[in-house]
Image (cartoon, rainbow, N blue to C red; front, side):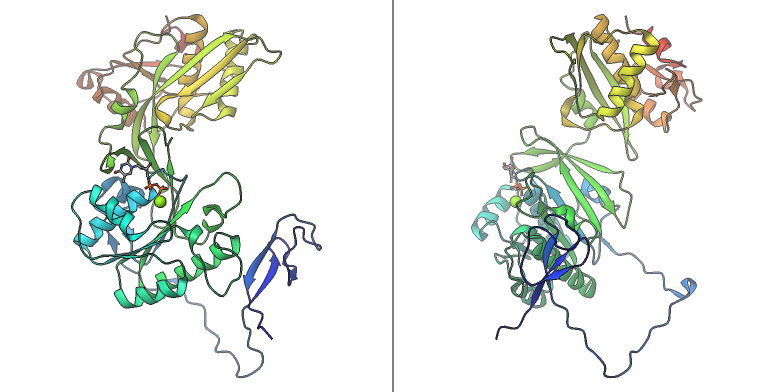
Length: 450
Ligand code: TYD
Ligand code: MG
């Protein structure tokens, strides 16, 4: 008789069954049952060797060793390079550039630090070679394994002893002792668990590619987020050339940092001056456009906000925003109606951040208020002016952090005026050649829209 190697367990309540069910008979949860390998529990025998808990003072400080990818934008997002033995998940929609970036990382690491093993379940060795040639000088010390079975991968890791392992992609990989298909929740979770144990045991830094899909047919990277050390997501529109890498979890660094890249004909290139890039196509002297300064981690970014208000033919006028938090935009619109008397109730309102970037910081509120009012009144926000400030429900403009950095960046890009909350800033206006206009309320700010 075949030995049972896996069982089905409800992920919500722990109910177990031998066959898959769509609904858990115990807790009634839908789609909560997933396959799990059976762990052998030894009963009886010798008594356990218990381990005493350690006092924190006696725990040794480990010197964190980091490998540099020689791609400063990526090293920055990782918190200063790849930590030895860490597991990094790189998620994103298909075609955004995950394999390309990791091939660039592989080439750089192989030329400076040592061997790299690329495991691909999606592309053939020839395809990978063609892409690597396209990216520039090819470094030796890169090994390609087109396999998806964990045992084969482990064998080659033992054989080659690489500094870095790249798994492309997790959805194609499988553990042979679990019967469910590659890409299912149990395969993805078990495979990653084994990678984690291998990474920690050998001090092998591992990159895992995870495709994000809208329908749940294959398990997405979300279910691995708690297993891995670092989670990076590629953002951006595949139709547009900019790509942003954002850390959403990082056990070894901050999660605020982003890396900005541009997809070129020979791979991903770092963008040295992102603000200039985001403002490149800005219409000057048009109502409904303003530049805000937002902070992405420690980096100030200048982005353009646009708005259009047009007569609505619907019973409930349309409110659409892209790149902004819908709730915050609704709040700003409510304040404009109530405190400024801007009658938007018969108008459709569209608000957009250009360049495909997302701005979630409340400091963008003032910008939203000014662009909407600017479009509604058909008046301009001066083109040489940047704004930032959080708006409160009473129509007041509230302080924001890191004002100095924001102003300095605006001055560097040639802006002449900045509208900001009435807060102290340690800046010499003359040195920077920028005029600082402090305002207390949204009403005061609107005086500059004319
Ligand atoms: P890819 O890295 O294959 O995406 P993923 O692994 O996330 O699915 O990205 C491929 C896209 O990038 C593809 O549409 C072609 C384009 N590309 C370039 O524009 N320049 C290049 O140098 C390379 C290698 C790819
Ligand atoms: Mg790929």
